Image (cartoon, rainbow, N blue to C red; front, top):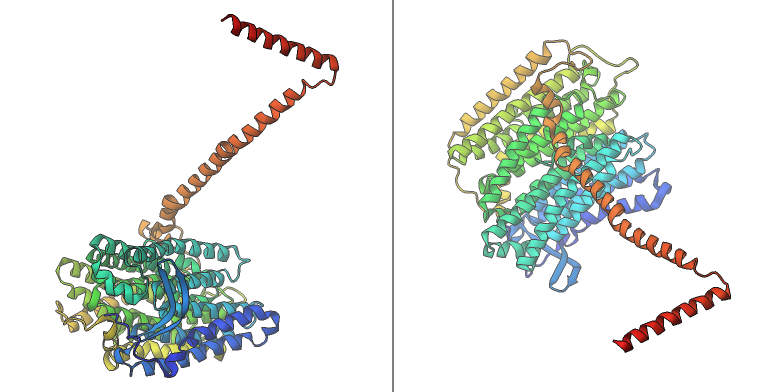
Length: 639
């Protein structure tokens, strides 16, 4: 498991220059940021071209990888850190797991770049936007291709920086600036966990490379391995927006829509899933940490699904859908060997249909003068035919409609959860099935409010289809939404491709027959669709949300009070602590310093008054001093 090809196996061909997959978008970002306005006319084309070229190289490298022993290549580039006992070599590890992510990041990333050409055509900061997109892609590629936890951490922080720049791209809008700061700060919490895990690895094992850590993790004490696993999980929760660090993800919708697609589909939110999957040997040694991963995934998938049912903002509904779907992936990888392939497969299919849904939402906003309130949509199916069809296919794939992508991969996760056996298997499987029903409800509600019913458009809005530069990527993603799941599960089994990384999975016990699981999940999905039609489809949608609603709806609209809890547990105590420290600094530290200065200054001014400048005063002082000295001498002598 997680074996690295020995150095004796030479790396040749395109694999020897695989570092260009990272270097190309990174060079594009540098050129656009340093080139200034001189690159305005063609900067977007350069940025798109670098990612397309990286995708072509990624495909070629993956094809060559399939013919190597162990399906892996380890490439040393240069010495990154060498001090004391720490020796970190900057290098790449290209194996089936990293190759899958490399293809997803560059492939979906290239489509999002193409889409952005049309979406950002009239934005004055387009060059800067494409530079940030390139930087984001390069950082994410470094994260998944690095051969050590230190290399992963460098990419991890690069993704955090790029996401901050992209979310705050329209920084003159207070909401965008606030959302970017919120994302940055909440991710710092997770990043501290990842950094501490890396420190602990080096302190205990003397190395941070995957080969070194995975080869010796079994020698560590159980408590140490559990601590490493929990700290890694904290980092994963931050980047992937999982409980309890999920509140930043929906607010990230304040950035341009292509950013939402890039963050929520192919890059940032998948980083946590990659970290858990890559660290499989660690979690294999600590059932406690693996159980916590399961709990986090199960709780988060329900939180995202429940909150998604109550929002009217089309992008935030999709954002909470992402929170929920990433929860499914955490649940899968938390199941261990029986769930790794299912989780990664769902991650790949999710990359297609969720990117298509976000780009479709951007197309709707493009037609509706950037409005996001679904209560102001309706009747758009005829006005936006391409958007409607492509968005509709993504919707069907997401809810698990039979034989589309989500049907194959989500059902596989539910089967793996049930196969765990015992009460925990039934609980986890039941939560996953319930999440599937809620997903069908909130996504059908979104479809009905956006594309069907009477037009509720704001006066002056004239919906129109998006240009080909935007619709073409949506068509490609729609094709993936339809076919990717079938191809990954039935035609080119992803589980077989990932065997060199995770090993051959144990034979499934099949507590419940797969056919029965499929029937039950489809039935629950159908109930969710019908419930949405009963509550939304057959009624006229008001243009404003009702003021009086049930406490359950109120809680969902407030994201189950996640921000309230964060404010109570973190923000307000932090403010109080800051105020206390400021008071202590002003009254304590500064008080002592200023008091000493005042005492010296006051005493010196008072002593200065004794300096009158009159000779008689000095003579009198000398006489008085002489009398005191003489008196003292007489007293000593007589004693």
